[in-house]
Image (cartoon, rainbow over all chains, first blue to last red; front, side, top):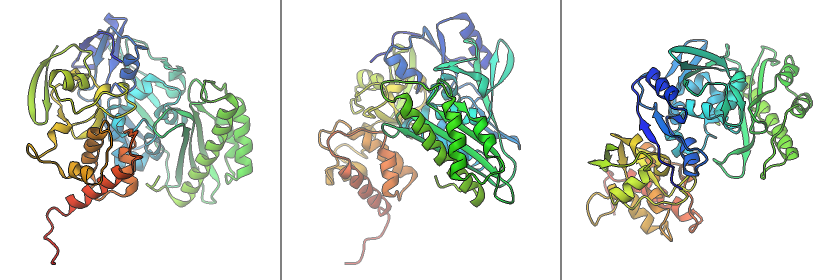
Length: 295
Length: 163
């Protein structure tokens, strides 16, 4: 389990990093390396050069812009996990990060690294798609932005060009106090890749009816899937069990489910349905009762 | 490639290939063999060291990425030669090990937990060591060891109870 030889560069700026990437087809960015290094150890990835962006100034931050939270690409997952601002403004992300690998990988792994690696089971990607986040990258001296729904193209494939480097991700923060979130996943053992995962965020009106709903399913299809049809069907309801199940069943039936030796299509559909029901129930209860920090 | 690793408060100048993991640099270049090579792809936890005080996989980090960062290995925990840290002592006392392969990583993980949280609940301890696999003990005595160490470390500055 040793990586093949490669060159190592530690550029001082994002533009320098992009120039190194543009000059070498085999070059890849490394920040935390918690996805890339295992792939290199198994020689599933053999980059000719690693461009280390972890120490580029100004790329690790969590910034509150009022209506959004912007997180820098090299922000460590553990830093976001521990940040009170993330719990206050983006509790869905805070809940999901607990499921990302385990504490020692979250200590090194970055928010941006998880996004650009685009593992279908990645929790941060699921939250980005569910909440309609915007990803920003640097490419040939320009700043480019793209919605998360367009960013993820397939397993480990994104729409970002090879010679580009992610700079930040922007999550809109829902207005109002009565917003609740839920996140659930199932895997063979804690910290392993999920077979299916579900995220939900709901805001309720004064009568306790759903005013705004976002639902996402991860690990079941090639990219995280946002279930807009199911979310729309819950608007104006009290998220009662029958309505939720019917809305989800139709939406999950429409997904192109992946199959691997560990979980069949039927199992993934069943798991996605059950997990989404739980996520919605949690989100609705928290929206009515007020979001709390306890998981 | 030349780099400087700060391990257990001592600075070491090294010349390694970029593909040398922190684990291999510690074991093969610095002869600090307390960090163990297990799965070498981040799953088993046997290679855990502290990077800037937080447990991390030394097999999932290239040494060049750690240039200038503060690394702590099991060799850096004992206060003096022939002595044990309170956590090491507690692992001996509760027999929190059998073959010992996972032990340095377990102890470093426990140190990091107790530095952050002096009064961990059983759940906190379980969560902290959940990234480290032990194939011998069934974990019970490891959890006991961490709880005992926490209790002792909390009491370090407490006056003795009257007899």
